[in-house]
Image (cartoon, rainbow, N blue to C red; front, side):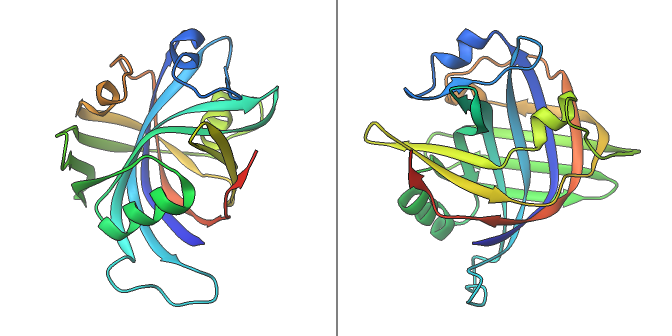
Length: 221
């Protein structure tokens, strides 16, 4: 599936690995950088969604999305992303991702606006979990290098999901991110708490105009 991810803000904090490990399914181990696990809240635009051989389906082409995630591996190999939750402002996308990718998607009312500052608003329909974020984008453009914290946080090319006690993985292909320094002028959220995670101060914030992505079908591990 072809997608375009646009105007992403990556908000991260670090936490002791055991806090995250206790929330992962069997078969996955929390990935760490300098001995710390990292948790992220990532709001962005999802656009250009289609299968390679088909045009975009009307009504599913562009919508805001937010994910709460951490970083994992399998026996020291195959580093990837584990999603605690994903929110999208599109019912069909939510149903499709739950059915075919086993991902914990939720339907939310969301909007993204930019007037010099990028603003992300979301309210989950059933539980009311929400966020209100304003990002100020810096000027410095960086291409994350292997071994850096930025590379560890953004350059991930596998996703993991689980259904009925069975672990699945899917490949994600995209060019390297170009990221900018960023500052959160406002970040009020309850989505981490809704996933059973602590709400801690953000330690690392960056912004990217985005990448074009190929998301492949999942397979059992």
